Length: 473
Image 1 (cartoon, helix red, strand yellow):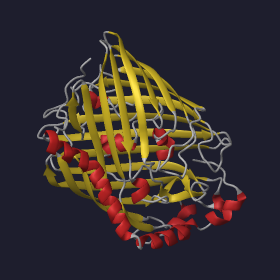
Image 2 (cartoon, helix red, strand yellow):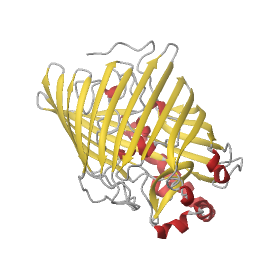
Image 3 (cartoon, one colour):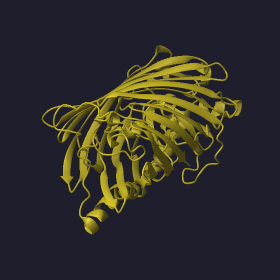
Image 4 (cartoon, rainbow, N blue to C red):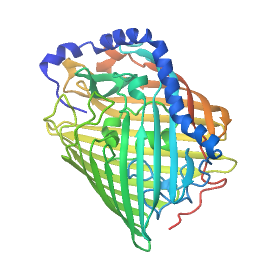
């Protein structure tokens, strides 16, 4: 985000990397606490599934999410449903457990990492940092018919990021957005709140292939942007948030959301009112709802393998350090998913985001990511081109100048223990960044970053064993 900072913070932001390094050094003395928190995150993800196995037998992961009924909209395949009310391709692979209790359909989905990341491991600049931690997320959902033509859903998403990663989050070169101890985070990815979603929805069939729906969340996700990166199959194995997160999908946690929309076949039109202010530093509570912002989104799934969207929104004072600066955000995305033969699958996403604030600063971001899966192995890549100002990067002398940041990530993952529907995987990735000449005294010419991790998650199931079927409309 491109909010202007006040003069009393400029002095503290001139050398932010040293402050973060001192905090990181203090954090290394709390290794036992971090390890316990990571174990708690793993239990948060795996515990419900293991309990279900003891009580009722292991719930079966999705085998054909392209054919199962959706929870939000009963007239679409479950594979289409992304975060909030967003859409994915019908043929998207899924990792979730499903149970039934009477008329209720229950879902458990999530992942937890234990990882070591070292940003600028080559020492090209002065902003590098290292940390042992791990992001986590788990989602619980329940849906049931409501009369002859209706469907009711409740859903919650939780994260132990505040406990595992701490208030300053994890190191991520060139990342920006949100604050810690009154200072804007620079070269750090903020932790997600304990409560990422507490939502309910009601949908009703209004024709042969038409539905209307209402979605309420506190917190929830408005109709703005693509499915959040946490829920895209193309980003499933990458533990890092995109550098363009605050240009594309950062509103996936908004404390107060009301969305209404209609679906006609493979087209969906929806609008939201929501709280524009980003979550505050108190990650365990619920922020005050404001409902001072709006958005609209048009989505189209032309076939089983594609999902397209364009959206536009107005965010009232999203940054706590600049409450008087509003942002108009425009996004577009195309997501493609293709089931191949012999247990292979490839999913890709292209995302564009554009922020224009009330002080006439305009910046863009572009993302291309892809994941190729073959049974127990996965190879994934992400390429980003993001326009960030000197203000975003904590550089007072260059505050109003914008720079194009290039970052390329290549990673791989292999399942070690695919037991009982839960998977323990070992993975790693490298990221290479191309730095503009004006930023090289701080970041170096070509910084190299490395991450290695263990990940626990439900087994990912492909929608079919052959090429993707045609759309079911």
